[in-house]
Length: 267
Length: 267
Image 1: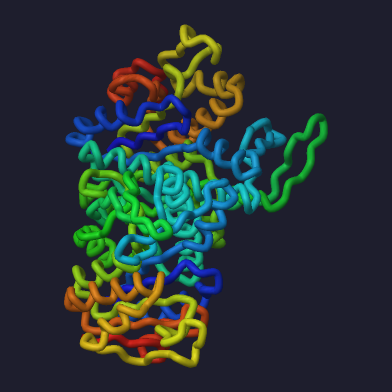
Image 2: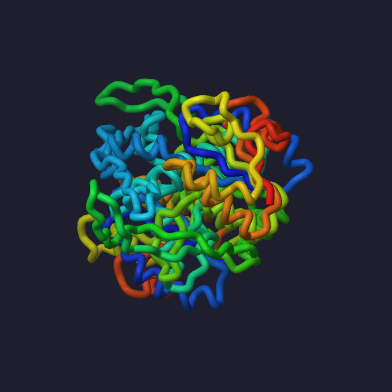
């Protein structure tokens, strides 16, 4: 099994990804998780409700999700982007089927409504932030679909234990899926060659990171990369042997990442 | 099996529908098809691309679907509305799973890009209208889900034979599903007690319509009701024995329709 998380950046090349997956699917069961952040921000602006990023007291950035932001999230992730990816994969003969974490309780999350947030030098309490962290996967549903040769194409939101729709981190959810389903491969593609020492310089690619050295990197990573590394940590903790970061803009992006051309994390 | 199509009107009561389905699902496999027209129009207005209705040369109203309208359609039908319905049903313990017609090629449609349209007294040709009519159902996928006790919650768009996403009529697709899957029950709920002689007077409810009398009604029906009747005709032609129209605003809407409190169509 290969779980592939693809970021929501503008220059991600889904044609290259699909072409790569045609041969991979002959050997491995596939699950795709995707983002849609750039499109989400675009639609949020058009609807006059721009995306608001908040920074937790522990220094993690996330999107503030009120009711309107959650509606926009559903529209762009579960609707527009998910179905366009599914249609594109189908064109390449890949039997894609799109789901959100809400469907069949595929992703169950622990809601975290109250959040301590940095605002300048102050720490304030935000209530009713509709977010959560995925803890539980409906493996039965995934296995039914894989057995019937479907390729699940999944994205946030998730369903909280209380049954509320909550925004959730796709990187994290992909890691929990990989751990729960004992997936052999977990690949993250985004708009960079892999993890960089200096995020503005592609020449500073870090090829390998072992679990012992991991904490160092986690400490210095910023913003989105920090969240990706927290997801990697979760996957490693759940027993995933190897996690690959790779470039989602190049030809054969998945094979290239699996060959170690990006960053490889090992236990 | 019971296929339930629920309209996208504002006063449709999904809590009443869910409460009704709790007992029904113990006896019948369920498939739900839903609309979202009111919400679609609302978001389309907010995005500055209002819904444009066109009337075909044969007098049938439909929504003109250019690329932007299709994006809005995906956002509202496949994203916002589909997932909110799924979450609501899940709250009532109904094992709902949302899909569009695109997913796993669930609904395959014949594209009809070119359309002759009335504009005042003139007839003009519209090209690149991204719509189609559902002809083929992925029964394998539906049966896998039903066998595993999921309730598919489905909405347009569909996938054309050429692999393009196309807007499609949900009433028609529900009829084709009922015929293809040999569903015993096909129920349409909307914001009226059933089919009315005079659509502005609920007292003019028509309780029963047999196939022979059908053509008369079809001739005089207007706008949306005309499309519903074309769907009913398709279902009857495909061998569905009984089709029920009922009120989606009342308690026990499905049971009430099945009791004949709305309009019942028979072969």
